Image (cartoon, rainbow over all chains, first blue to last red; front, side):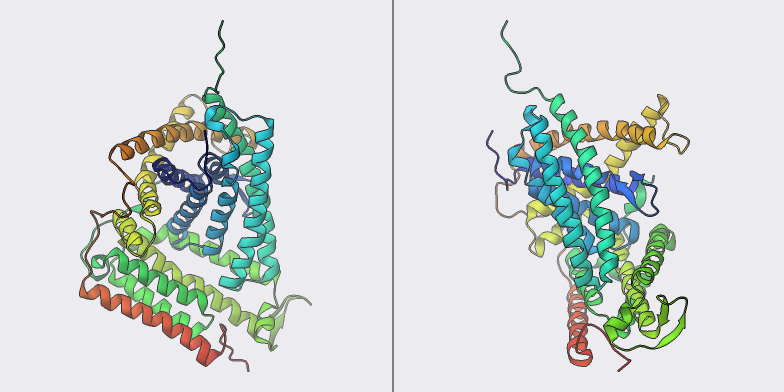
Length: 186
Length: 277
């Protein structure tokens, strides 16, 4: 199947909508404490990565953007825009891996796994160590060393989440779908 | 876990009767004004204004209580962290040094730092009522319609409408699965070890995600069958026509935004109001 990077079919739209709802739910309620106070591993980024790898950069970016924006708004009354944008950028970059994978055809081997993780680590570093702190400084004039420390911690937590949970989900999903030519003639 | 976070209750007053478009434009104008300015006078004025509007909109305190607590915790955390990480940031910004008292060599409380941090505190605090109001007074299905009318692609806004529509369903599914798994003996409470708890959480999330994937298939087929996405434009059932009040509110908020920028460029000569020079 030939996949275009910036496809926006009906299915992509629906996946974006429901993915964002899922992202929002996990973002608000399902967190794993790390032991460091006020730092939690957000399981939502695992799902964000999973959807980005399945449906492409636009879906991934919008899922994280909408999901993060709404959950922030519902919880705090207003969204922390710089981090919302960083979330979107991270999942957008993870989505770049989409044309190279064929998970829905049942293929997710070691090579794909490495590929996905390289993209997700790059995405998290760009999103949280570059985009988030820079926007924090530009929009909110936050102190420089504070935002970079927060950024590095966030990058590590989210990369762990996107790496572990995302990879497990992709593996499970590929197993649930029969791969092409898996039937043999007897 | 409460599914009622988004409870939109229809009321009949000035704020509720405005169209979604007006609310979006006003919300963004006021939010950007507050984000841009570091002048405590401007910020306090907008804050007072947003609390007045909050009062006019007749939102009950019980509706926003939880949000306020979360926001308060966040603000206190940010206030403390800013001081711990950079106790002299105010001095850097304002370029003067007025010591009040000192804890240690590094942690000196200065008037500049105090002004910077208090300004920042109000800056965040003043946006909160705006966001809450926007969220609680806008009909979710009208939200997408009005985003579309300010130029966002209807495909993206349709995704947002789907999110708002399916979020409560998602919470219900999550609860159903969690209860079903717990009745089979899965422990999610703090008694269980962390590793097992993570695994147990995954045991709830995986069925939730996979049932969502099935649902995506179902909904996108239904939409395709009804010819979704064939045209460049679409109409919205819940779009409200603009009234006189809408225009008045929009013009007022745009003026506030322009005013804030004018104050920054012509009076303060920068984003910060500096009373120390």
